Image (cartoon, rainbow, N blue to C red):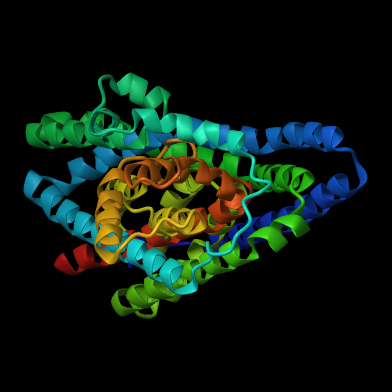
Length: 422
């Protein structure tokens, strides 16, 4: 598709090895965690979990230190290379149409399955720990239109970079890139310097990714050490299995749409993003694979200016797995408490989620915060969030991987549209 496909054969072996190492690390982590949980006291298991999770924390922090400079340099270079406001507007328009369409479909899939399978009916609430929800529900007090706007528009680009606020960095980078493009040839040395800097950062990605299997091992072992998986599965089989049906349906839709636009290139794309998918699944963080995903999409053959423009926007506006979960979890809690919501109310909830969920990338446990805020808005007991907390980590694994798949397909499709233009 472009010059980035050169020397792919030399890249395939390391990529395949990394995927294998990560899968092995997941297995060993789950096994070790289960052994600790079965043979040690709750206090020992909790201490082990907190210490072993440091491996995952180190890996995610290594990735996080790269994200802000990578988004800024690649997006500025990408916009400057696009050349003018009309081109930026054309690609941005296509991106937003795709993102909002995908978000709507994801929300509808969650809404349909939770109404059809009714996983919340007949669930026992007797041993639910309501205090566990306070971490999430306390954040809903700041969930307002004012907070939403403040979250989008940065008051300081340095603060945005320090806190990895991707959407705020995107807003500043778009203004900076457009201003640079309007100046013309005089700004070429600066754009060239940013271009070289972005390649240095992508080289750092290769170093950081070598630590990925260790990070995944720590994340999985930490969870399995403190979670009684058998009890969780018995209690939450209906919820989790229904959720998996919804996620599987979303994958089918995404892959089908991807095939319609990409045809045989879809298979190649999936091969390229296997490692990012597995890392996102293991660490429950789509953010953790942002730099690696940027690299793989360029190697797939999408022009760097398209990737650097689309992917940061996608991470802010196109979280398909999270969107599907939001309607599913909100209506699940309503079912548990016997709160009847008619079709009109559910459609209103869908529209509210379409708007309130944008720009929440980077907010810790963002999906749960939005679910809690939505429950409060529609008179559903917010403390019901505590019901899904014990199994949320496992749901998050699938949400994160789905977010990566959705953004990869969106970027590839828009990249193909633009390549046909010239």
